[in-house]
Image (tube, rainbow, N blue to C red; front, side, top):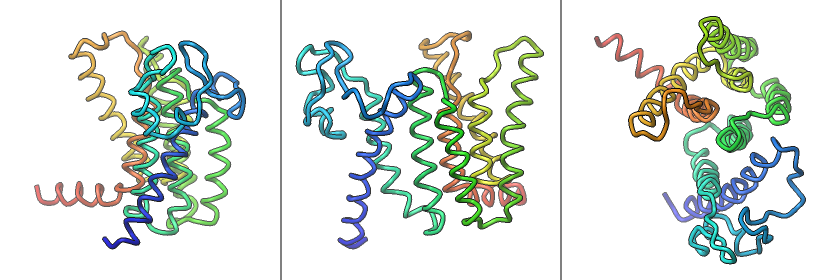
Length: 259
């Protein structure tokens, strides 16, 4: 990779980190009905308004050593993780997604990052984010659709319908059911990806949730009754399926044929 490509990638990382910082604010404020513009961000411990150094994505966290320099309260790692995720994802997308699909990929990553922050913080996937995203991606898919339009419409129905059926079955059996936010998020993923990849996303998100859930219980960090936000698993699975879904499906089918 030449210098121009490296320069472009670094610029995308910086832009992604800046957006990641903003997505943290959106994900933490929108569910609480707080404006994303005002008031200015402040320390959760002493209430001091953050200054320019505090607000530098990634570097600000390291400069302050993960603590408020006034009261010493720890700064949540959610902030730096969100900024790093934004930088890495924005920089990597041009390498794994076609040029046309970048118009879908960047808004998708943005929405998934915001919803992940919100679900981790409050176990809530706000309609104020999901419904506008549905309208946005409906419009985008009318113009950018490698597959026939009906694939995306059916993906919306199957994505949301499958999780709704699972939720209703769990409720009927008296077991904890996933929230409607998760159902709407999977419907959104289906709208973006189409029927084939949303089925893969349903399977992969369930696999990720099961593996990580068992690991957390085995480590003693959670007990069997502890609720686990499912949105982040849908988000991670959705990103993987959007970028690598077709190669994964091909690899799996080749594996079956080989056996």
